[in-house]
Length: 211
Image (cartoon, rainbow, N blue to C red):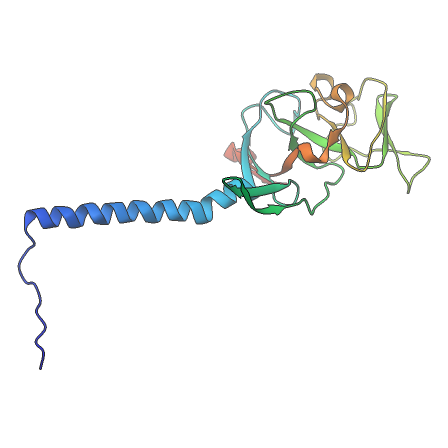
């Protein structure tokens, strides 16, 4: 019968140190793998954090608030390994009127804006009489956008404008209409410039909200 031998004496100091270093390196490797497999895809393809800067979306979003943006479904994303593209995910969701979104404004490099979707693809948007009127296939004579859910009735939308959107564009406005740089100045926003829809206000805690 084979007799199994067990070590009942401590390892020499040099061997103990070697085992300790290997264990530490293995733990670091596991953390790195966990980040690659779980955290990085979530961060790159699903959600992205943003801080609000400025007052253009007051009173609904304030300067310094921390938001989580849902990218998946709204933004085209891809993963490449070197020069080879592994996969690509194309947008599968459409934004709705009233959605707060983050996007890269046309003609402005290196910045992200947060505004509210007012005009949808294919519609004609008119700023007239301090209000916003929309014309589309269902309403060829137009209707005034009901914004009471997020704006006070006293808020006026200034600047007589008219835009006919393509099937690839949105018209966006800031909630603080008198202090917002939006589609009234830089025009419609194409779908490929949209980063995502605001999902969660995580900070400050007393204004925590899911959208």
